[in-house]
Length: 111
Image 1 (cartoon, one colour):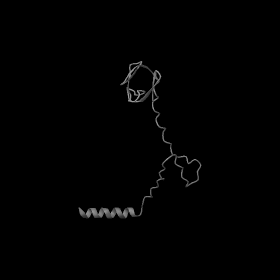
Image 2 (cartoon, rainbow, N blue to C red):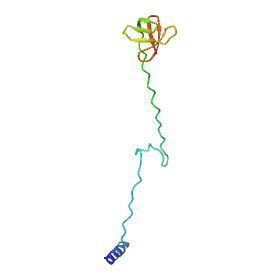
Image 3 (cartoon, rainbow, N blue to C red):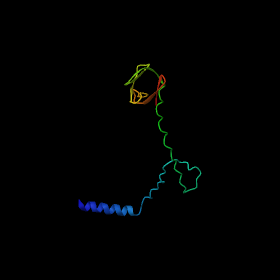
Image 4 (cartoon, rainbow, N blue to C red):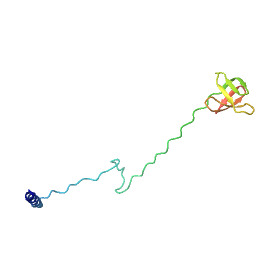
């Protein structure tokens, strides 16, 4: 069996020695757009840099709320929301959603 394989390998080597297949030619792989934009050969396309997206806008400040009632611990607006006092003279308050607020006349203004 071993002799048969050696003979077969030798026969195939001699048979293929005179008739070789032509080399395979493959075009180069091109990455990116097919249009070169009229540039001369060898020039690289400038890279486009995208600007970062604009920062998200903070939520708008709520409209001033009319005061309903105040005491030493804070105030309530006309819709029943409680604004806790930060101390001091009572004009600075904290809204239910954590915003810093001030009393101006009969209204509560929040940032």
